Length: 417
Image 1 (tube, helix red, strand yellow):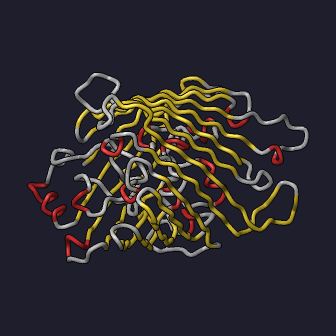
Image 2 (cartoon, one colour):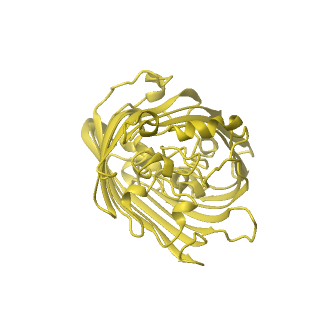
Image 3 (cartoon, one colour):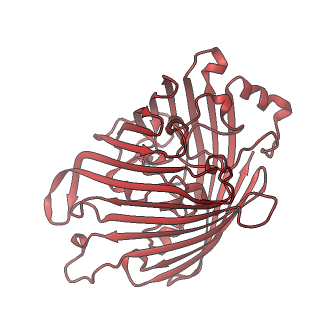
């Protein structure tokens, strides 16, 4: 991630990238790629400030118990990223460039089951496109940062800090109902600009403005032609980071950042001044907003200087019930770092999601909606420097606000090339 990256590129773990969705659970090191170091060329480019990354991720999920027939849904993504530190390349200190493109496709199990909580945090639209790009400038030793280009609000606002440890969407990526306010998401990013300020060591304030596009896949299918459609959507966040400097916190955490008793506490809001339909009026309403609160905290460590131990995470958002059908969402989770006595990195994570639907959207005479609840338990195994496996079991109660239940089993595979 850009604005949450350490001060100099050479201080980033080898193979790390600037953006949130491309981040790695562990430092890749010289043997962390299936295709190796390209005869030393990858390391030489990294020393000059140029980093290439190519990764494959797949979620293979089965609904082993539900009212629908059993079905395997496989979602696949190949993402290529380039990051350039112009300080190392041409001695332009504090200037960076990032670009990422991807191909993705497959079956969306959540649509088939009718869940509000998507079983996969990756699944969206079948596409081959440029996802995001931006230029970024940092001043005053990371105290002030500005970015302009094409990037997604949900990559950095309302994003789950422990997201790499979960698979279902509200915990594996960003809060699931941010879409109701048309906050842009990955991969159909929209033109945007952002400013971030760190007034004191453990506090940051950031704000971005992005172009609203209510049909980004249709309007910009390749991602190559920026589309300034709709109204400007504004998103802001303030974060408190006890245990570490605010300038070092990224969108997603990793093994190194889990060391010690660090935490991250965030409050954010998004506002869209556009027109929104309501169930109680034929006249569109102007304006819509969403508020969110998020907290991630290390609870216990075997050694205060290590990452082995227990972490907790919590998030809640709210938006007006008169405008937003899915107007409240709560997530909570626990993560056990290195609980299995193996020589490889491993975690065991337990997550909970609750979605509440607004009763104002009920049809006359229809039964009241129930709160949909979902639970996930997964085990992450870093079986090799370039290969990660993550088996998972998910349970859904009151699917889509109704009486149905579902059980999903599967696994995530991630390969670094």
